[in-house]
Image (cartoon, rainbow, N blue to C red):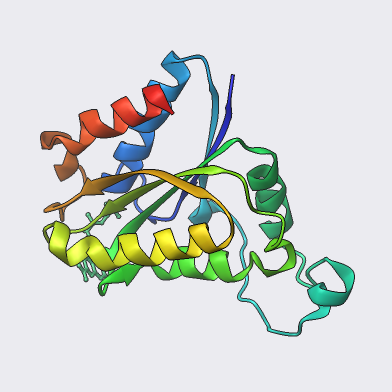
Amino acid sequence: MKKIVILSASPRKMGNSDLLCQQFKKGAEESGNSVEQIYLYDKKIEFCRACYACFKTGKCVLQDDMSEILEKMQSADVIVVATPTYFMTMNGMLKNTIDRFLPKWRELDGHDVYLIITGHDGKEGLKLVGEELTGIFKNLGNNIKGIVWGEGVWQKGEVRETKAMSEAHQLGHNC
Ligand SMILES: Cc1cc2nc3c(=O)[nH]c(=O)nc-3n(C[C@H](O)[C@H](O)[C@H](O)COP(=O)(O)O)c2cc1C
């Protein structure tokens, strides 16, 4: 049994990336894994202050939900990162969360990582998001195992009509 944590960066519950996360979760649970989906918008996550106190103490000076999220990521076998595309990149919620990886950036390695990316553009338009997230998580020392492209979807729920649903389910099954 693998422990899987999903970082879900969209503010839209039942939105396109959320639905793909749920499909991934369903597939992974059907294969006997334990899955927790974290809705980042429900958490208190402040901006990194670049004070570098964490370089000395290993801890962040900010008292919010980020230390708990980092602990969950560290203890997971598999990390799923889901974001809508905002102005050709990941959304601010996810970038803010990634900046807060700083206290543990040397200890977030060795995970299998899956990416879920949505946007109204076709895959060409979402490519940059995939490249950025692949670069970031590879640099931290992880393996990118798969990407679900929720392309061509704008309104909440449109992704239901696309093949990305079954792709997310399948990746969850096999993760
Ligand atoms: C501020 C903002 C910027 C956006 N920029 C892009 C973009 O550059 N490219 C794109 O394909 N979609 C863009 N979109 C559309 C969303 O990516 C799209 O609606 C996606 O399905 C949202 O995923 P969600 O339902 O998981 O929130 C943007 C949406 C918002 C709110």
